[in-house]
Image (tube, rainbow, N blue to C red; front, top):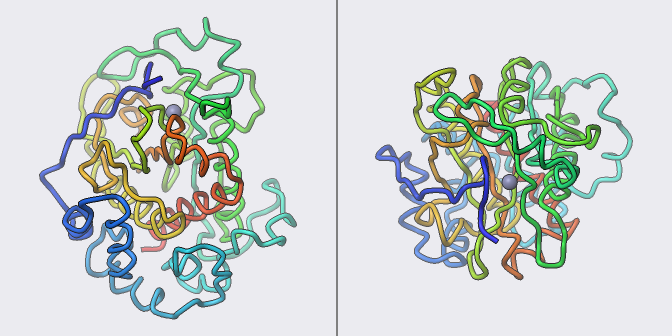
Length: 336
Ligand code: ZN
């Protein structure tokens, strides 16, 4: 099935006239998915989602230049451990498979680390219980520019692995990684409510937390053959209760960093069906973005309806890489 409902519409492949250097490079280098990935790897640090331009690229260059720094090298993508640019993070970024990640629960006090004092909100798209609460989730909510359904059920793979289960799992993995760097991490839902929250509440949770960064985690429900990830950036809207103008630029920076680190860690290519090969799409119709007052992006980690992408999305090892990529993008943004 294709996208239905509020934060689940087919993204429009809108291209921003403002292309940061990274994006220009990626757009130019990514005529095709795999070729783009290989070129991205070949260009090394320029693949950093360095929205802040040369400074970020230079910072990550020195870090990523240390070959295999304590990296488990369990993935084909190099430098997934060296990617974070946060000060002193070389010994803080956990290995994706590190058993020590099991040793601390999210309720423990935040340790010291490069992200100490930073607040991150992770928004696992949809809720496994939405299927049983269609009346509640079909209720319309005000997103400033429009009224849209509270939430949707999300999509699933053809074999029945749901987007809601996927997003919650990735969010929990990312939370663990970010907490180990000292961040305070809040999830909009943690499998602890029957349905929802609605998209307006999801935005409000980030706003009220005064989050330094928010990432809404999703997987797509597009046609077979459509593959790859894309990051959705808020477009400028100013209508009703929505005013994204202050967050457009920082959200783009966040999104570019998340995209770059996601490629580096997962080896996934940018979407071959939206975004023109950049992995970035700007939208003005998503309540979760329109109502945000803090830097926020969505990431569609892959297409659940494509068998090859589904094979990745259903793999716990791959989801750990996805969580690592998202976390590193956030960490890079917060450490700039
Ligand atoms: Zn979704």
